Amino acid sequence: MGEYSKALSSYEQSLEIQAIALPPNHPDLAGSYQGIGVVYNKMGEYSKALSSYERSLEIRKIALPPNHLDFAQSYNNIGSVYYDMGEYSNALSSHERSLEIRKIALPPNHPDLAASYNNI
Image (tube, rainbow, N blue to C red; front, top):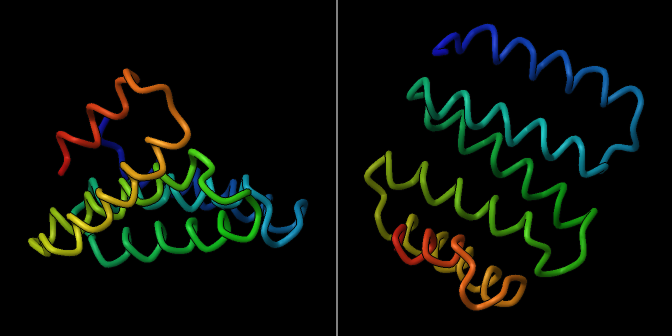
């Protein structure tokens, strides 16, 4: 709906509650940081989006097994922010990492693989 300040406020409230109720590196926290990053990206606040996406990725690295599909999402989102910032080399390496994980975690004809190739 384009109401980014309301969305951001809701994600921040969610994160505040999760920080109290969950262990510090629970995967749900990563999801909230991911959502915050999406909102900042849509607002054009790329450095804040990147910071939120990177925090989400840090939590996932601690909480999830290697090559978990959520990593592909993190790298994809990070790559998209780099692309929007005009940092194409960083965007490419992030999208390639996302593709590597998707190749391991998904069947060969999955549409997310096509999305990764498109992003590259």
